[in-house]
Length: 273
Figure 1 (spheres, rainbow, N blue to C red):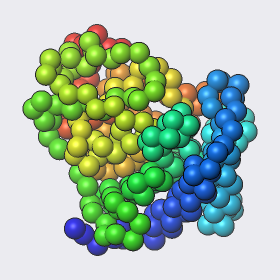
Figure 2 (figure 1 turned 135 degrees about the vertical axis):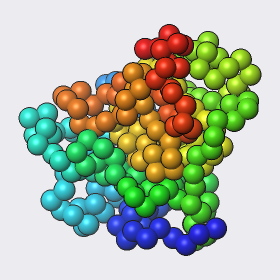
Figure 3 (figure 1 turned 45 degrees about the vertical axis):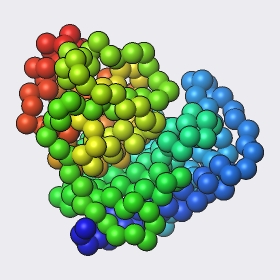
Figure 4 (figure 1 turned 180 degrees about the vertical axis):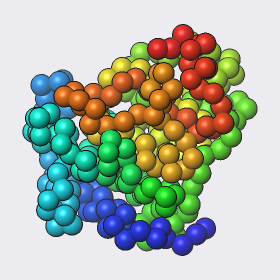
């Protein structure tokens, strides 16, 4: 066990995520309606309640800094292209898991500077697990509210490797994962950005995402994983970056723990991209 992270803003954002988690759980415990957005993804009162808490809290911390969030209208690229520093938020990542009531959903809050996530907070409201990270300050895990902080780090590639997989999205990546990790790899399915956090705390080795994700789905957890010693790479082996253009969609990517491996070569040999 270690002391708390020596970063006051990071701890404030962690507290803000917990407040958003409380708003989510107030809805989770009751009956709730599910709407369908234009992109066919679900929307609940919990998404909107968490959005309200987070946006208000960030405005109190820095009313000038822009906020991009899944549950808000997006600023046009002509404006966003001038942003060198901004908040990137998913108030409820894993709404499908929320609707299923399996607990595998998160609150994601990231600070982006020059296209890179330099601060990330990921909260799992049901278990109360909180992951926080800031550039140069490492990655930390609080198992429950008010418990001691633990500094976390990735592991060397295990034998057999463990691949984190999506609970609700995408087709089978099994053939590609066999080529990347070997025939004996073990699959652990999990929802939302918790897959990144599983790798960050040394409980899994890789997560391959085929198909669409948005920038707010990945930024906070990417910071956690990078500060734990891992990486999130596009399928050419380059780090995932943000605010790249008009689209807020990410390229397909591979999140890994052991960065001593030449993943770019492995991906090419596995037939990626």
